[in-house]
Each structure stands twice: as C-alpha cells, then as structure tokens.
Length: 309
Image (cartoon, rainbow, N blue to C red):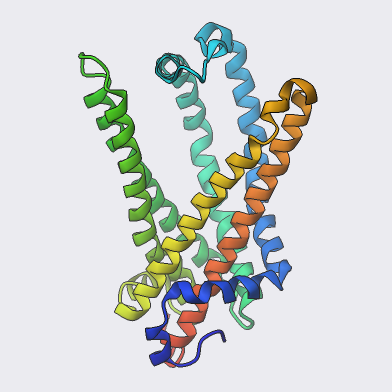
C-alpha cells in the first residue's frame, strides 16, 4: 500500500498521496486502457449519432440563415446576441433530438459504466466479485445525482440571464458573465463535495460485500477522517479536469495563427489529436482517483468485518 497506519493516514493530506497513486496507475497502462475501452464503447456511437443529427439540423437551418456565419469573435457583445438568436432557432430541434436519444443514451451509459467500472476495479484489486447488476443500479444513482446537480445549475444560469439580460432594460453582459462564472464554479465545487458519496458506494459494494442500499447508507457513515480524504481527492481531481480542459484549449489554438498557410484539414487533425489526448488523460485521472479511494479504504475500513448483503 501507499500508506501505512490509520494514525499516519489521518495526518497526511489526501493530495500528498496523489503523485504516488498516479505513478502506480502509470506503470499499469492496462487499467487506463480498460477505462478508455468501456467509455469509448459508449462514447464513439454516441458521437456518431450526434454528428448525424447535427448535420440534419444544419440542413434544415444552415448557419447562414441563423447568423452564425457572421460570428465575429472581436465583438463579444454582438457575438453573444447572435448566439442567443441562433440558439432560439436551434433549440426546438435540439430538444427534440434530446427527447429521442436522451433516455437511450442514459440507459446505455449506466449499463456500460456499471460493467466497465466493475472490470476496472477487479483488475485493480484482485479477488473482487463480479456484480454487474448491482453496479448498474449504483451507476444509475450516480447519474441521477449528476443530473440533479446539472438541473440546479441550469436553473441558476437561467435566473442570471433573466435578471441581467432579459429583464427589459439595457443588458448587463458583465453582470451576467460574473454570475455565470460564480455559479458554474460554485456548482462545480458542490459536485466535487457530494459526488464522493455515490463514487465510493460501488467500492463498498465490492470490497465489503454489501448490498446496494447498504453501500449507499454506509458511504454516509465512513467517519470524518475518511470522508475528508475522499472529498479532498475528489476536489483535486476535479481541478485537474479543469486544467486539462484549459490545456486542451491552448493546444487547439496553437496553429490558428497559421490557418491560412496550413489549411483547414490540418487544423482538424490537430483538434482530433488534442481531443484524443484530453479523453485519454481524463480517463487516466479517473483511474488514479479510484486508486486513491481504495488506498484510503485499506487504511480506514479494511479491518472491519464484511457486512451481510
């Protein structure tokens, strides 16, 4: 293990062990490969389906007819207005696609993620059972918590827009942007602070032989020391994901000044490479987070006797 002793672990911050956990995962590339595999078994068909639907929408409403072709990045206010007008035109079509594909995509994700996460944990920790049905139920709970958080964020952003832009007076773009950034960071922090509860439950299910409800209930009674470590790791890994997004945006813009010389096809190839890098790196850090959770479970929970399912 990367830690030794419960007393020592309580004095060590969760972030101090992350480098060791990342190194452990890096030396076992099959774990990241398995994580990438199950995610792309779901993600690749979804991206293809989204691409097809987007092309259909653009056939009905070409960008020229919605004003997006005149988008000017040097004029943020006019660009924001054009985006808002275009979104009002595209929204009914997007909502219709989401109604048709949303439930199917959610079902596919919870099934594949339940099976895939079980396989990753079994490869990471030898001797764990294969309980795909229970894992699928727990992934359903995780998705429900995520959707609830996303819905609350969307409602708050709509409030900011209604009070700063759509209130009948002169639009306050600075005020809206301030609230949008504040609310987005706030809900990001909220998700990091609450999602550990549904993230640790599958491990309690497999490591302690608990039932679905038992693992969810026990994840709320892990003790302050263990809970603090889980929250800290979750928050740090969330910040790492934000850094990856910023890094990917920077890499994607490297060749933009030379677009007229290299052509659009080269830009598309660059964006493809950057996208692959982002997704693989993101999956790597997902596995590192799982390793961190398991290491602290060994310290704080392993001596406990397994509960009856």
